[in-house]
Length: 334
Figure (cartoon, rainbow, N blue to C red):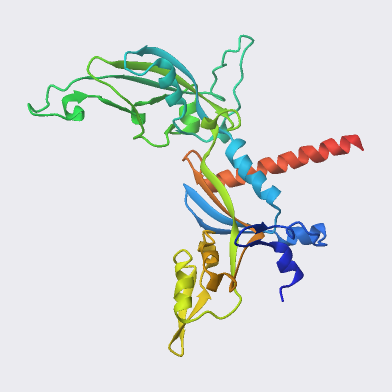
């Protein structure tokens, strides 16, 4: 028989419903016990992506981290586009919008949020603004072969990439920041043909995703609950092989006992919650599918401005600041 703590921590998946009635049951934990049970396990990490398990917290806490990573961890992005010349087929406003979505590789922690004067004009200084310029013109390639058909061979600068953007340091930024550039140098901005030209100046500022999506540091920041699969009875032979086919590869394994295939749970983490097993009458009562309600599998993918683990750390700092502010407001009322 399942223990009370097991029942309280599981979300049961049945054929027609998701049973969450026991998830928020009182556990009787003290605050110290709650803190002791919290754990973070990093499964893998690179600069671009991190996957970690957040264990022992309520869904509201996990979702707070996710929302902060999406909307409140600041980065630098293009905010002002000063168009000197644009004879391409792309209208100025569309081109300006495209420029704003190009990720800029600059540590936002080294900058202040932008300031504006009484006329709502951006105040340009080395502590809050980065400046880029883009000046490029397409022309015929006189060295092209007679039979050339590709625009890249017939013309010069027919494709405008982010590598054509040049950083213009303000003040002592070159000494303080080193190199500032776009996260990828091969993002296609637009196509030009002979005679067409683009010339513009770009100002980048610090901002947050809740103001505009271009300031969001993540491509994705998601979590899912850890799957749990329990075989209620031994499943053997053809039925075991059928059970294995109901799940994603690597979830159910088979071992041979006395020349008979016996099913066992190999890695429930790989389960994708299809509930395919519930379609089979001979299997659905032999398997219990559930999710662990306080075990969250986080996947965070950075757009390249900050390492993925730094985004997670910044979200923790921001949530701590919010808690400190809230505690301070409560203290003022007592």
